[in-house]
Image (cartoon, rainbow, N blue to C red):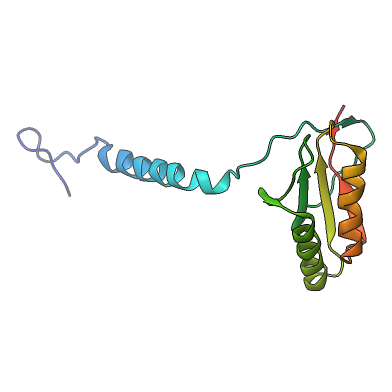
Length: 135
């Protein structure tokens, strides 16, 4: 049985040793600080159009973002039309039931969005969704 020095020697130590607890909390804090940048993905700022009739969709490996100036991105990487077609073709080959998710800025020209949809459908992906912000 543990005892305090200089005092009642038959009494057990009733004080809580807080130092190990603080050490553990600091280690957990460091782990969170290191892992957070990997959890939070950088994204491209797009001003999505608003609609009230949208439904939730599953996350997809084929997510195309189109900015207001018409530039296209897949997984936050700028891509050309040929790269969109190739990536969509590869995804359709891996998973025939792939759904493309298109996030286009509300100021993007309609023709550019149709062009990207056509590239994706021509590559073999028949299902797609367009991302919106709920009203």
